[in-house]
Image (cartoon, rainbow, N blue to C red; front, side, top):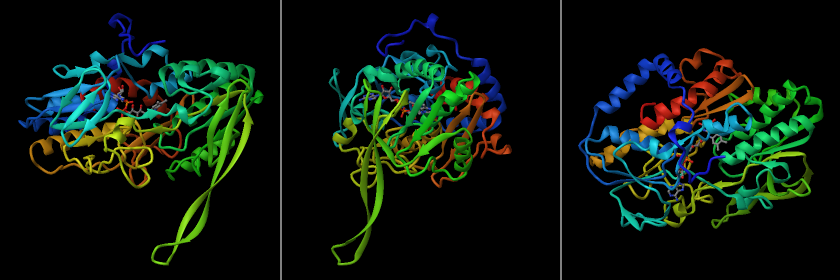
Length: 469
Ligand SMILES: Cc1cc2nc3c(=O)[nH]c(=O)nc-3n(C[C@H](O)[C@H](O)[C@H](O)COP(=O)(O)OP(=O)(O)OC[C@H]3O[C@@H](n4cnc5c(N)ncnc54)[C@H](O)[C@@H]3O)c2cc1C
């Protein structure tokens, strides 16, 4: 298993399929090339110290784009990780499609040349002074800040388990690289031995809402392929009141769950896991409508939560911890202070320009951004060009010119060979990318599987992280 603090020798890294990417780029090419030409032809002479917090999908994409757009870029990335992970590949490791070493690169190879990298963690931001404090390297001053540290997996939110003992008592979570490797071991054991499987998501906003569904459906398909399906019982618990909230795709997903006898339970949260006894402590949370009287004496409709705890034994469990913004975001006064996005500290940015609502020299994108769309790298692919253009506009003393429409995609793998490619925007209406729009994308498609397994990873490393896709 790779260790985030050990750089991997180049000779040991599997070669990505650059040829595949080039072929696909040619297929999708004309439009993409035109887009690149338009945005990068406008090279800017704007100046200023740019600090990027986080060198993940969002941070590196931004660095690459800003480097191309500015004639004299002065960019510093702060990130402690030695390795850069392609996290959408974790599901494919956990289901045995990818080898464990196929999804990461040395961070030093991902950071654009000429960009200063401080290998450290940010502990605080003073947005009034324009200063970022690091754990080991003192402070760094900025004129413009890109806030892209991703999100925090809040392991303490599920009692009885932490990242160090993932897999203990057959409770798994593939949301880390090590967890994905262990999940694949657990999946194979479950498929062979049989028993009761419990799959859960979480009640907070979480990255890739499709991932827990994917590992459930893939395991179910694997058991059919291996002839053991009759020995397995599949139970899916969602904290939401419905399986999926994008109406164009939901009917087919519900049909798949029904046809394949995956039992669906809504409004359920995980409180804890007793790994020794193999018991999950769950809570059914119901929202009861109540009426209160406001200060003006008028009746106000509200909801009260009714919580009903219950316990389930399991033989295999896949769970998600709750997720929130990294602690320093909230403690530095960069989070929403009211509304649905305040509790978990998501960054307070305008959902169209991605510019911070209080500090116009801060822009935020990726998982940390407090915007009402899915937290996926597919969303970042559309956010990065907008955030980069808007930041350069601000550096030039202009108003941000670009607007993000909330585009996100979630390829829900329904079996080994098919994907329900869910693409949508803020309106929750489908927003299918050409040429997929020529197909019936309300159903799972083989071509979407090919895209997911063979194309998206090279597109990530050779396109997105280079500021080209
Ligand atoms: C299991 C799984 C399956 C997924 N499947 C898909 C999928 O199919 N399709 C899809 O589009 N997306 C998918 N995603 C989601 C996607 O990977 C994320 O949305 C994306 O990686 C978010 O990018 P980011 O840059 O915001 O955060 P990250 O990529 O997580 O990067 C954050 C970076 O910030 C750094 N950092 C953190 N804290 C600090 C700090 N205090 N100081 C400095 N640096 C810091 C970290 O080291 C990291 O390098 C999946 C994710 C998972 C876990």
